[in-house]
Length: 109
Length: 119
Image 1 (cartoon, each protein chain N blue to C red):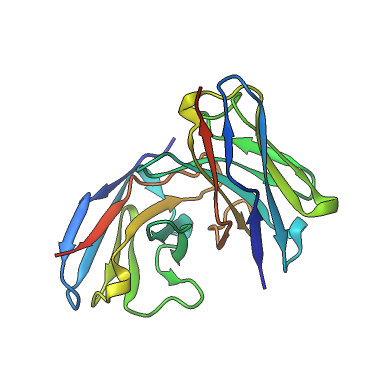
Image 2 (image 1 turned 90 degrees about the vertical axis):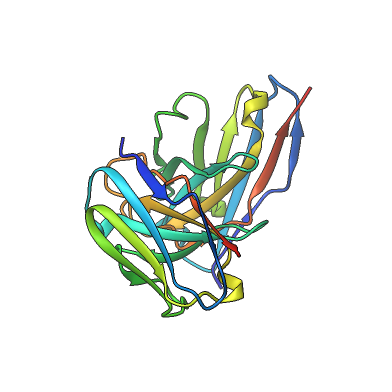
């Protein structure tokens, strides 16, 4: 089973600042099979990024994903008030389980 | 409009059985797999398993294998998650989500079903 470790656990930033979130895998993950989700309190998760770097439909271009192998990054170029939430990475390769990272909370400073 | 509509909140006692549902609409139900994801109170997302509604082939995370059953009825565009004997530790929010192939991200999610197990 592939274990995904996200860091930091919490990121305290102000609107307008840049957020950099990390997701590290215990073994190599094809970049084709790495996604990022956003979850706000009381809501279901929402797909942001798939294939490590492709934005899902309707996702603003301030969100970008990068990485390969065991190290992946989600970057929010300039935080908007609605971006304060918890972010999860997930690998969804051919062999289940399709594990999630433990999440990074982006909170307002 | 694509929608996944889940059944309502449940309150059960330990040892009781339960089946919750996820009804898809606005798309070809048999063309997309359905995942189930658990979120315990204040915790992160845990992938439980998935099913292909076209043939009801399912696979599970080892963490959940044997404790839950995932099924689907393609005639009514509905997937299910069921327990034969609930434990207090099953208290959580459960989400269904669809994905296009066995190796695709979950692009639409249900609203979640809160299951509370308490004596």
